[in-house]
Amino acid sequence: MMKKLFVLFAVAAFAMSSCSESGFLISGTVASDAELDGQYIYLYTHGAEGILLDSALVTDGSFTFKGVQKTPALVDLRFADGVIDREAYKSKGGFEPFAPWFVLDNNARLTVSVGKTSAVEGSAENDELTAHLQQAGKLYGSLPALKANLQNINKLYDNMPPELRAKNEALKKAEKSLEQFEAQVTAFHKKYILKHSNSLTAAAIFYDHRHDLSEDVRREILAQAGETFKSAPNIDKMIEHLDVLEKVAVGKPFSDLELADPSGELHKLSEYAGTGKVVLLDFWASWCPPCRADMPHVAELYKQYKGKGFEIVGLSFDRTEEDWKKGIEELHMTWPQLSDLNYWQSAAATLYGVNSIPHTILVDKDGVIIAKDLRGDSLDAKLAELFD
Image (cartoon, rainbow, N blue to C red; front, side, top):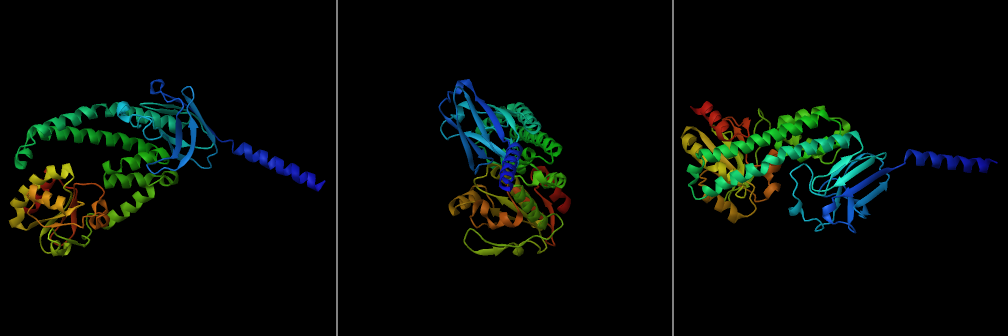
């Protein structure tokens, strides 16, 4: 009798477990013009290095995924490389063509349409994500024209001397329009992130647009973020990065390091900074177009203020000595230059938390950081305040 009761109890426990883990269901369709019948679509954990979770065969334009997802997670749907001609299906929206991403939980009953722009519906979070990315698509609609205009102007002035290019009004206007667009996009995504400060999807958007958000905005977002947000992939790396930035924040003394100059001779930053001069640490690379565009103006400022106690130290993220030296010569950079030629793994990038260039750090006569990321007019104004 006891054995029979134990069996009944075990069956009941299994039934309860099955009910509590009923699993998810993804019902998908693909664009009718894509001719994807007979192809497999794959379910991955979200991100470029995603882990393969499952696959499904597309039949009559449809596919299905079923399974158990213990905790909510971000996932991607993708076809194998080469199956989709991405150039033929370029998306202007927040989705890559035929590669939607979304949050998946165990009770999800999702409907996914996969195409040039995709949609994922069936839960509040995914519904709001789809709406956000579709709105982003409309916003991004003006980007190709802005970029094309800037490229056309650049071609017209390719042979113009750098000092004249820096003063060209048409070029300045095109660059300003692109900057305004980027600011609009950043504000758009920031609004979504702050509204969904404890969601995985907002965390993913936060990470994707991290380079567009100022240090202060990133801190603002993380201060409001819940534990689910912080548990999303790569958010821990962003928190660590902000910890690095805190050590080299405005008001903190500069951090010293030793790198080689173009002749191979080692120099420390402390040979320049903290020695009674105002020093601009200029993070750049010869392969970086915005860096190259800034240099004629920086060179003018160097000539203007060098005799008044101003110094610049270039910290290059180049990969080869040849490219580095060629860039210095072409851009008429007559100030000290240092590099370890380690690209984004440069010791300077690690120490100062630099993950986008051009980037600048201004250090006062006593070696204290007084400003960051000054360029163009903002750099002009600060140097005028200090020296004029």
